[in-house]
Image 1: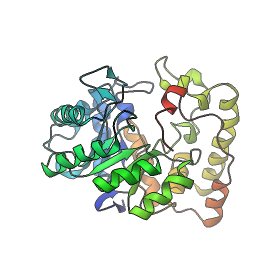
Image 2: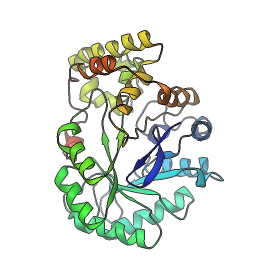
Image 3: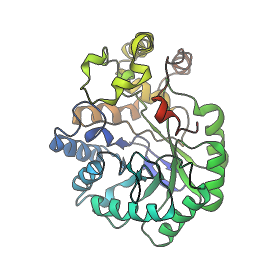
Length: 325
């Protein structure tokens, strides 16, 4: 495994997103033992960036990650997120990045993760009711106290990134970025590179679509959030299958899997990018991390870049209102 730097934090250039082990996807929370084996196998393969959030579950994913990292904490850059639970107000799925809420959130996350510090602490979504300067200032206090090592933002736009960075340097921005979600390239990515901020793409495999294994939404459990995702609905789904098929065709030519090709394309976009493909299975983490060794030719990269845009929004309408891409 090769390593890069998100600002001044060294991480494996392929990380592990833990969300689906407990939340959001079909089978989440049904086999914690396999999920823990997956984390352990990722560490054996050189993965050092592990990503979770208090809202995943809520809370159960941080607890799971804490159990998985017991006795192994010093091997990882541990990232979690705050701001999607209003602890003193309306509860889960209500943005709150006020300083008092952050204080409550960090203490809970530290306890569930079984650690005395969080390496990378992200604001999960920009809170429209709290100036970003107040949020950045609150995290700066946690950094001064040693409870947090570095500050991150998720799905923040250029203005928010600049304003936050002026108060407390931002180490990384986490945003959706993949072959079929490239909206950050025009507005966000140039700002990150100007300010020396790393990029952590989530859903780098298009929520499984780019693996070529998703052929029908009938595969999903009733509570799988992809059932309500515009890209997985109706005509959008049928159109997007053509993109997955093209990735699969190139993968067959190079002797790799579609997931490895999609990740290799993403890694080729810069040495300041560390995607966090999510999985709850050992076999998948082995497949994903092997993409580190796959190098595509310039022609193959161009062929992938020329794929048509995906049909449909990446989020439902209420979710999309919290994005600043």
